[in-house]
Image 1 (spheres, rainbow, N blue to C red):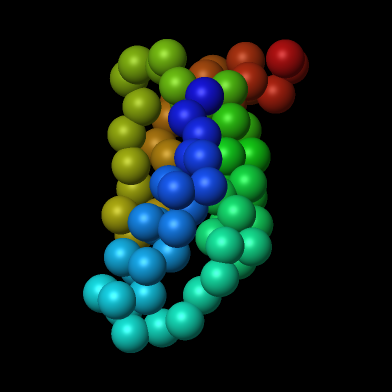
Image 2: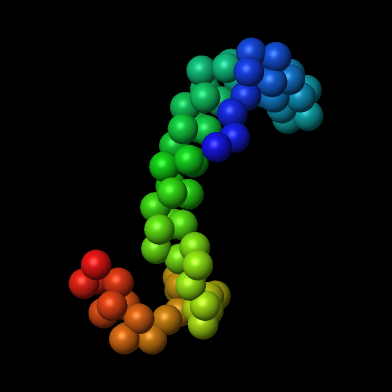
Length: 75
């Protein structure tokens, strides 16, 4: 896993605040980071090593066969 030390969080905070013109603190970045890690973990378990999947731009969803979804629902 990737992690940031105290200096790393300070750099992220100052760079983001400078480039965006907003003022967010370490705790806000940390909360976002933790939530993104959870979401990525779920995504990776479902799609990480799969092939033959596509993307439906109209519905903004993963495009897969019914058999693929049936197999995933059984797990």
